[in-house]
Image 1 (cartoon, one colour):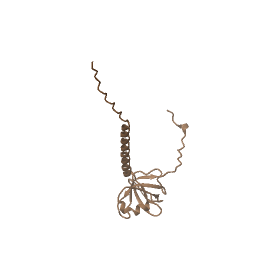
Image 2 (cartoon, rainbow, N blue to C red):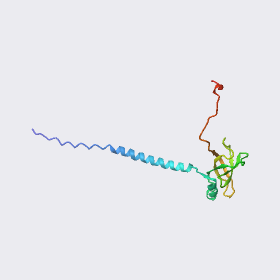
Image 3 (cartoon, rainbow, N blue to C red):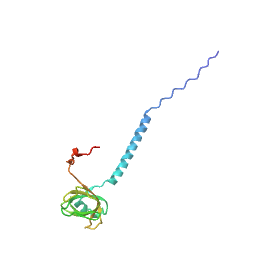
Image 4 (cartoon, rainbow, N blue to C red):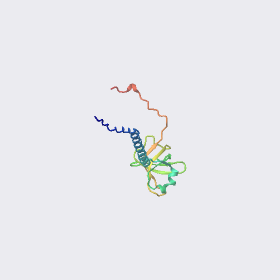
Length: 157
């Protein structure tokens, strides 16, 4: 009787390292993070509107043209005049003064000598052109005190 040797068994395949999956996930996460940062940078840079003092704005009037920006200063005492659609007043930083034509409602704290930031653009590149505004921002004090309310007279439901 002849004994036939069984063929030699093939060596077991080497196990694949599990690090490849982690590597792909890490690279994918980095790509997503970079894309998100780029998108945020582009979107925020287009929506950020810095404010300029009156003197800075007057100095840069020609280069700004009719681009939108914010103008900061104080309301000149006695210059507030109601118009059909809003209000006209003057803003100063102590060195220069600009006429502002505002369309729309004014904030409750808007008054003479109030520090304001108006958002809008120059009406034209002309030297004495007014600033056309559609938004007024007013800084208020850090100490907020709510109005006094008599809770005893409140209607119960």
